[in-house]
Image 1 (cartoon, rainbow over the protein chains, first blue to last red):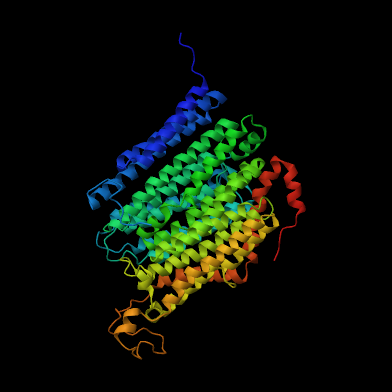
Image 2: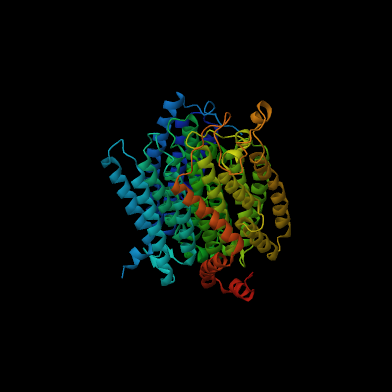
Length: 103
Length: 524
């Protein structure tokens, strides 16, 4: 039998995934990739919730995950619609070229 | 008698029903017909929701949905505030989309759905419901930011708001996950108990910091403010008027509930973070506004600065901080929504006037509107007899009472800097237009004593202000004036709101509460 992974393992993995998401959000230049990095961050949060729910033996954490997934889906629908609108207007998805307004 | 679960969400239910009704009616109406009846329906729904919120007040503290929702005078205060902002926005945008073929029916519905989310945020005492309310309001405003579909800046503003908003939401969620890890609950009352006995205070503090990052983005506090100028510049003016006030008010309400209700034990640790954010917001907001030529961008930076002033109140824990913050939110909402309502009427859908140069000489063309904008700008500066004055007064006295002298000094210095760019716009509006000064001698007809702008060579025909927008503007101006002359009513409402928010804290740890009640609340 495989020994159980300690809770800390899941938490560290989630923290790593979250950091990768933050890094990708800042580095990537394509809007779709940026959007994907946000999804990665949300999934890292979900993993954290599930790990803590297991640790506390309470179901709230798992319920929270369902709500996060639903909201992420709603956000994806709106986000992709906005991405289509911007591609129609500008013919590009590179954030460096979407700079009509600057500081 | 309504069941408690319906009663506790009465305003939200009314708004949702009206919003769905508008969405259903929109495709039934003939494509060419005006969508104004739907706008009036939305206005009626907003008034009804405000009435429903007022009705909740007589029941004291209401609980519902397994103690996730709590309707008390704190939530009613913010419900009424949000309803008022939405009302002024709707009145101002009834004629905004005329002749531009956008789906304005959906605009009205989205405004109401956004309001539902904001109201839900203010009455929830469970982080799950806060998250859901935050997302309902955010998703509606993401769409509304890009509502002028033809314009390239509109979709750019929308995508920037969406990406950075979702980024912030992820931080907020990670904060909630860590709170859950540290305390084993997402209910604010249980969190307050859990934080006091937690074995991992560092984890709890990290969670507060993450939540502050997430909510800091939403209230556009520095250093999380980068999206604000771009989004405000590209979004339609009535939408900016709403999203610079109502979601901010709701987010500040959530911050008050989370910090004062959920983490009162860790006050000494999060107060330092708030201190830094407040100072950065005030300085970056005011210095950034000095550099702007675009009026909407300038007001965006000014809203960053105002978020900073508001956060100053948060450091005055727990005595008069909440009341000062509530009052400032109300005053800021009145004057900012009013300023953007005037800009909506001055510039119209196509935004013909954008920069300081375009606004030069506006007083000759639109004297009444310019006078109103001047009044709102004076209120944003904080001149006496306007709501902005008492807002700043209460915030800074609260900070002084709490012993944060340096914070109050920095805030007052910043108010001085802020005078400069507001007065620059004011002076420009009352100066003569540049091309007229050079090209022609002023004709007596333009400066006629009747005050009615006459159509002369250099001026385009000036359209009048539609009646609903005039009513909305009047309401905003009246609110700003009343808050500046008779602040007592709103202040006592804010104090009763804060008393009820504090009563939660009292139940949890009686020691700071004894100090609280011993200290007499400031009455002016």
